[in-house]
Length: 104
Image (tube, rainbow, N blue to C red; front, side, top):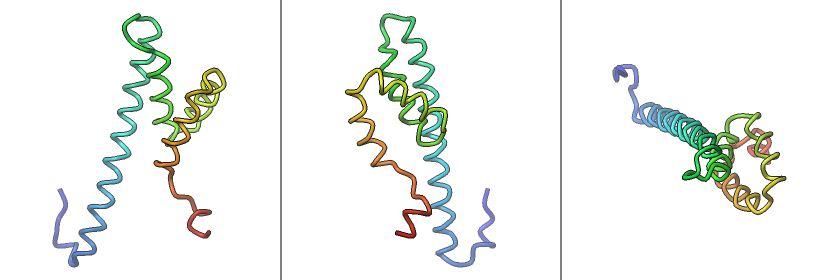
């Protein structure tokens, strides 16, 4: 619970909301990525789940946050090049801003 007496101005409260929104979004992406990765691994063994497709989706979500997921994603994209175009569109929409982007 946040004590509002420390946030005297409206801008302070707005910045707190922005921080909370980004944290919730980050946690939601991580949970969704891990859940889809587990479903993808199960899908490799169960005939009713498309395992490779779920793993590609999960790794594309997790690659926004983890370097190991980017490496696995590169390996999978070499095996399935048609998915690379769709992944590039997804990553371009959800790209994290870097210090190089801010200075340009």
